[in-house]
Image (cartoon, rainbow over all chains, first blue to last red; front, side, top):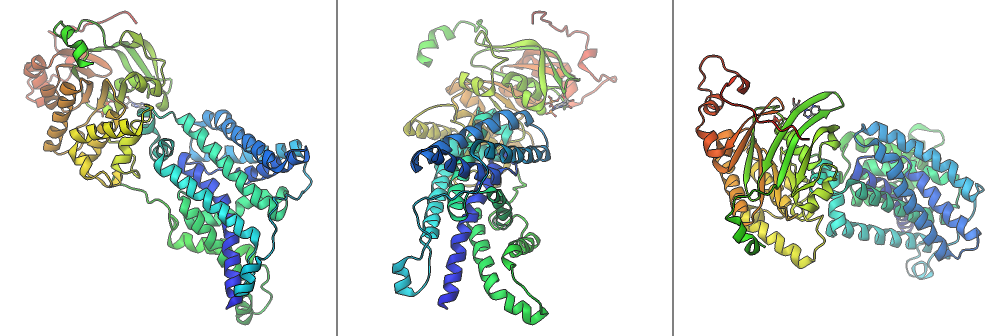
Length: 304
Length: 280
Ligand SMILES: Nc1ncnc2c1ncn2[C@@H]1O[C@H](COP(=O)(O)OP(=O)(O)OP(=O)(O)O)[C@@H](O)[C@H]1O
Ligand SMILES: [Mg+2]
């Protein structure tokens, strides 16, 4: 039982990391209907900016601040130089533009900050919390817990921002109906620039967490692929969906990795290692069949 | 504000307010839709823009509000002036700040926002305090009590009448001087249409909001408007005060279908001479 709990909690906490990446996708998709293929590359760029600035002598806080500025500028530039030119084009054109953007970042970032893998030290150690270990005998990593806390804070802030501020409401309005938003004087370009800025910020948070855990390297761009099943399960348009989807993927893949191979082996024989790698996609496929809009996805309201 | 302008109001409104001068509109660089439309809306009036499907009413309103560009339409000739200044190059955002706002046809509510949130987005262009926002909201609720009772409902799930009220109320939140209202009667039951027109009349009288009202429902619009223009194929083919148009035999014949020998178009009506303006 203790072991089960340990696996479950470990899985949930790592799911938070997936959720962080998924969140960036959701924001942009919600506001502009664009599936931003470059979100993973943005995570890489953010992490690399932090490490790069630190190598040039900046302390951690300053490096994070500089990376924040870089990501915001990058977001605004993307809106201004890429997406604005493509207004009124079909979604597939925008999607392809973001693929191009991903390649652009993947080439640019190493040129600016170097391509060799590096460690990122946030000063939070990845070791069990003694109090919990003593009390319940469960191993919970301090780092994972901090990451979860950061994610919770980020999501709460975003949710409040969307729900209660003037800009947040305008973002949701633009997501619902561009034309109507334009007609009441909401400047779409500002709104899209803000969304890309926020997505850049979310990428920075994800980049810090993933970079600190796995090292800052090119593989960070693949975190985007991990986010895909999260999005399918949680829904492309829901911030809470990204979180819950992340938790489900995180927990289920860890549990599957531990408990599924013996079952499979007794059924089919053979070796079933590495389940973690493909299990999320199978789960996502399953969800696609029974609930294609995702758990929290907005239903299309046809009445309008 | 009303008190200050009250003495001059007795004099006829000679100063130009909204003036559309001989505009031509082309969609997608090739489709010529408006072929020289001119019209005036005097301050504090309701002017009806009438015509059949595809006559160009919506296009005219969008040319004024500058929403055309988002649909690949272009004003290629002519000009639009509001209070003596050209506004054709302004963005919708700037135009709303100057007091001109369009309510689009088809009840474009933000479906996933509540009715109250819809109204709040209408105040986007105004930087105002929470208190003022609340005040504006109460004012809209005063005119549309139905919106208040359903304020927490998602707009996508409200009735057609409520959605129409929602979009008009949302425009009011921007504190406009002039509303370009496109087919508020579309697809609504007659008594709801009546209710909405009464509210429009009330806003016109009490809040001094001017209206340019595009409608297919000719007789209804002419009952509430002061003046009317009739569009056909992208041209103004007839204009006059509402009373005159309402009793005009040709209008009656055309719109109530009491037809005599095969007249199909206002162009065939001899005694109407189109007034043209050659300045542009
Ligand atoms: N985006 C567009 N691209 C090309 N042609 C258009 C576009 N919008 C409208 N048109 C054409 O312009 C003409 C006038 O359309 P408009 O919508 O202005 O008419 P309307 O008087 O508002 O009609 P209705 O009463 O049906 O709303 C129509 O022939 C229409 O097909
Ligand atoms: Mg129309």
